[in-house]
Length: 118
DNA sequence: AGGGTGACGATCA
DNA sequence: ATGATCGCCACCC
Image (cartoon, rainbow, N blue to C red):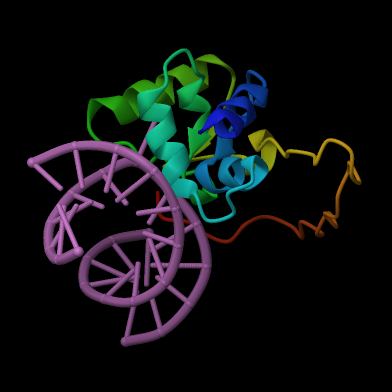
């Protein structure tokens, strides 16, 4: 059952987002990104718009993609071109029990980014 | 049982 | 950055 997946998705707070892969992993399916997608489509009443593809890219097509984007912006999520500004909104799961903060070294952001094609 | 598909992801060209 | 491939996993003919 995708119970674990459902649960993981529901843990993502408003104004934040996560990815299929991350959700899958958090739910105990390290390679189940597709399962997450399937679950999102099947189950209802879930904050489906908060789940994105790797890198914060919207994987939906057509009008649904726009819908998702609007919903996210409506929640205060900002975009960087075509994808969500994960830097600011990615929600990190904690193994609920294990080392919370986990290891993220806060890489030095250096100065400005180089370029980027819209 | 067999084959195709998709709200994915990582790699390589 | 874009497009093609391959690997994964569950569902649907």
